[in-house]
Length: 134
Ligand code: HEC
Ligand code: HEC
Image 1 (cartoon, helix red, strand yellow):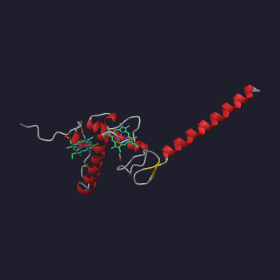
Image 2 (cartoon, rainbow, N blue to C red):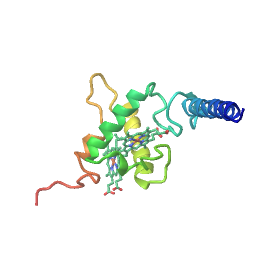
Image 3 (tube, rainbow, N blue to C red):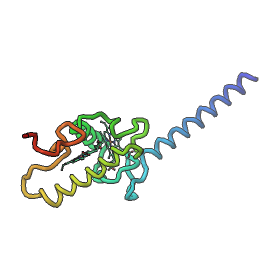
Image 4 (cartoon, protein in one colour):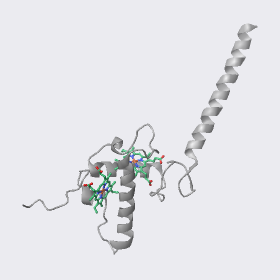
């Protein structure tokens, strides 16, 4: 009697917990970004709003990290990628806007070499400001 009761209580608890997990996963997948768009990934995407897939976003992030010679944690709290707590991430967002504007409005002729983070940063967080010649 007691055993059956415990079994059913356990089963019901397991079902409830699974449901909570599923609902939370869905919420994470289908959240809104700053422009009110429903996205399947990324809860705090303000500039890269045209990025369609998680793979594309990851590729951009890896390129940015390599261009600056850093790892993800230079800009991110790796336990919460959506957080803007690091100043470097907030600066990087300004940089992203700048680069997108340069390529859209200025270097937009046929087959122009596009400007990216590496154009200036060359593997460093602070680009060298002046010619190295003395
Ligand atoms: C130079 C800073 C920088 C580095 C390095 C960087 N990121 Fe990002 N990351 C950003 C910025 C800025 C955004 C927000 C972009 C936007 O608002 O459109 C972002 C957004 C993200 C998001 C979306 C989070 C959300 O839910 O909104 C993920 C996931 C992410 N980065 C993963 C990574 C990973 C993984 C790496 C390492 C391979 C990495 N990032 C390296 C600056 C950086
Ligand atoms: C036109 C040149 C240029 C381009 C292109 C550029 N940056 Fe920068 N970036 C700078 C300069 C200059 C600074 C200021 C460095 C300093 O504070 O001495 C800077 C600073 C930063 C910083 C802050 C560094 C710190 O230690 O405070 C981050 C993060 C950053 N850039 C990320 C990026 C990312 C990501 C991209 C590509 C999306 C990018 N930058 C593209 C010129 C550029």
